[in-house]
Amino acid sequence: MQLPEFEYLRPKSLEEGLAFLAEHGEDAKIMLGGSDLLINMKFRLDTPKYLVSFNALPELQAVTELPDGGLRIGAGCKLTQLADSELLKSRYPALHAAALSVGSKHVRNAATLGGNLCLDTRCWYTNQSENWRESRDGCFKTDNQLCHVIQSASKCHALNSSDTAPVLMVMDATVSLVSQAGERQVRMLEFYNDDGVEHTVLKPGEMLVSVTLPPPTGRAVYAKLAQRNGLDFASGTFAASIAGSNEKPTAVCLVMGSVGPEPRLLDSSAQLILASGLNDETIETAALAARASLGEITNLFSPSGYKRRLVKALIKDALLELRDQPI
Amino acid sequence: MAKQLITLTVNGDEHEVAVQPYQTLLEVLRDELDLIGTKRGCTAGSCGVCTVNGEEGEAVLSCCALAVEWDGRTLTTVEGVQEGTELHPIQQKFLEHGAVQCGFCTPGLIMSAKALLDVNTSPTETDINEAMAGAICRCTGHIKVKIAIREAAKVLRERDSAAGVNHGAA
Image (cartoon, rainbow over all chains, first blue to last red; front, side, top):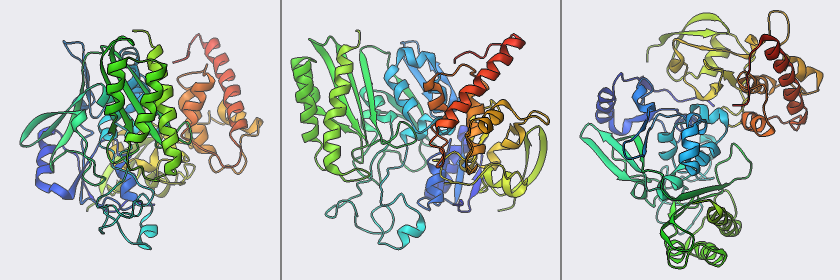
């Protein structure tokens, strides 16, 4: 496969880059690692007129320790840098595990944290070559008002496939979005929309430039199930955070990824654990409740029946691991 | 769009080449520089046959890299792995241990293994699996490939010892 033609812009400053984005709007796409964008371009899912590479800006790769004990990670930080980071491994092990689970080492050498958070949604139907798609009707993502996966759908159900998103959500991280108009902070819990097409709150001309992690209090866990140990997008991911003891937690957050257009907050399961503690019984119940609360599960990449069983097993194993983590 | 003149240092040789921004590093290496050792496979970052080594010796998927982003930079392809007229230990062990069948993925496997062994001559099974997960082989089932990597690691460890250098576990 070859890339389509495009014009290449390589701004020397963030201001210059944001000006390009403001000027060209929908005709421009942001490139950092390019490990998602370039492939989607080869599939002709994206055909921007302008590719704006932000790779001349070392400030986007900075990792800064914050006075409150938190960490700010630049959107341009390679996932390999995060996977190799002893600091991340010791202070934010769940995020470290998530970064390490993405793709392969080859992919992680190019891929960035910002890119992983803004990963386009995926669907077995649309993530196919142009040739394949042209022999069939389009869909919400391309040029038609229908979904091939859920026939009765009124919107796109392509899956959010970011491995780092669920962890950053349960950690209550924030992202910094900048445009020519200014800067705003958005909680990761509010960054995604339940729509396979407009799947983030990024406005035209806006770019995610950094992720801010709060100080590492409490415990967190991350789990990913995929067909192979490497290379594959997840069949399902799960992240959980807990503050306080197993007997009397003070905060609990559970997020399931790769099962819908946005990572799914498992509220009722979290409430259960908050109320009754983290033990064998609540873990079993929470896992079952999660399976029920997921609602419409598509048969994307795996049969929906398998996914429902997967959800329960993944959550149960991960919560058991979380329970056994030292405080 | 007009072509851009870029400079690439490949296997120690500097090349000046006019490229379009939409040409990948893989295409430029093969089609402009005639370095056809690096292969075109899935061209979607999922197979690793296009693997080259970047400035830090890291594994780079050249099919998913824009040549223009490599202007002024250094990389190594499989053509640059041999040591003078001698094979590199990785190449030697691949041959000795039957890790080459059709040979199509071999450059990608070698560059991926080299990216590992250049920084770690005492890799654990996990290290090897992690380094090689991105480079797949349809013929060998990977078993002989891993044996060859372990054997090459031994040779490189011995070399390190002799030189008083330690490329220990990362």
